[in-house]
Structure formats: structure tokens, C-alpha cells
Length: 171
Image (cartoon, rainbow, N blue to C red; front, side, top):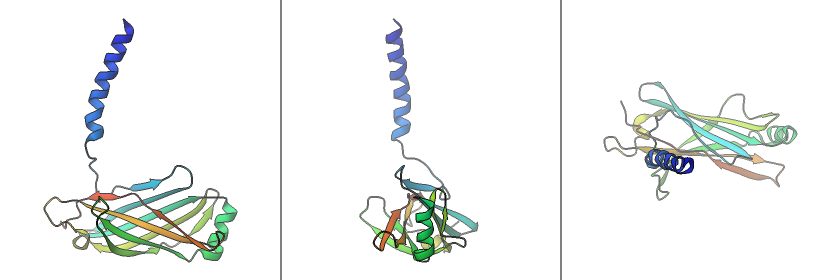
């Protein structure tokens, strides 16, 4: 008798949760969007608006590795870091370069968890970020961040952030 009630309760809970999971998430353009693999890296993008119609893009990359290895990257190749902000239409058919990003003061750095990198693109106008000009249209942006790893046969390591989606229309 108790098992049918439990199954009925699970079915009702599932019916309530499923429509919420299927609906697209609503997010502000200032929300942080991260991409990670649970093991080796975490790359995040977020925007802020220090003044009306002016946006700053911020990227943080945490690459997990021994601190000694990370320190060698900082010491030998740390100045060789870059990131580019890209627009995407969401389905991968269209991307457009928006801006290069500059390494933030105090980065790159090594810590006990690994290698950390912070980059910014400042003073981006909302008008330049408003690619889809239809009223209420959403824009999507991501960043590809890379650094030179002299320990890995002199190769570049690249990571993509999560995608920030929202209405960037001027106010």
C-alpha cells in the first residue's frame, strides 16, 4: 500500500519539475557563465555595467595543476596569455569577433590549486554588443582564453568559457 503512494508522489513531483527543466533559463547579462570539466579547469565570463550603456567583460581561468608546474608557466610563459570575446547566435552557425581582452594586473599567478588567469575587455558599448537589434532579442557571448605552456612541448592551451546570453540593447 505504501509503495503505490510513493510511486504516485514521485510521478507528481516529476510532472512538476519537468516543465521547469524544459523551459529556457532567464538570466541577466551580468550573470556569470562558466565552463568546466570537473577535473582540470574552470573558465568563467561575466559582464558588469560601470556606467549606463558601457559594459566591461571579465574572464577568469583556473587550471588545476601542481603549484610548481603553474609557477614555471608564470615565470617562463606567463606574459603569453590572450583571450578573445566572441558573439554567437547560439547554434554555432554564426560567430563574430568582438574584442581582444587584456591580462588583468596581478595575473597570471600560481597558487596551491594551480594556474590562475584574469582578463578584461573594458568600455564596450551596449550598442556594439547589441548584434540582434530586434526589440527584446537576446545576444550570446563567449570567450576563448589561451596561455602558452612551455612545459608542454611549447604549446598553447585554450579553453572556452560558458556563454552569457541576454538583452544587450542600449538603455
